[in-house]
Image 1 (cartoon, helix red, strand yellow):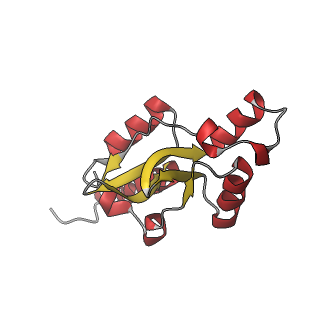
Image 2: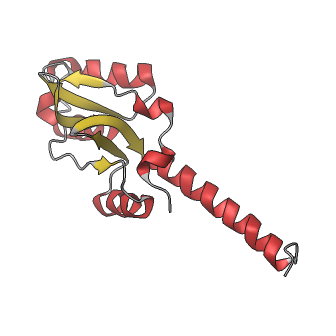
Image 3: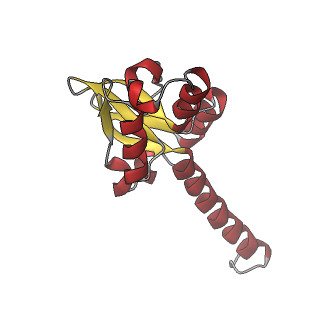
Length: 147
């Protein structure tokens, strides 16, 4: 099976970050502008957490009486980041994402965040693999291969 490195597209390598002292409204605007579902929260250029679509919903239900402009990203971000490495097998990554109910995984290279992997990337790669396997099996069954 493929590895994380093999399925990363150039668009995945653009990491969108935000400072923890910015407002949730700023984070939401940035997510909409860049059409992403997660931001890496940084402090002094080092990752300290993630802010995801799910964090927006949690923020709304837990702090609904406050306006998104009055809530700092650091108050509601996910601090226990689960990460992937480029050599991780997609089967392993899929299991990690399902088990932890997450849709975004930062990918590390030499200790630094290199890319953001989404569940969409993983599913797309697996569907491509399954289509190829299905094609080869159909050819095999229909006796297109000599032997």
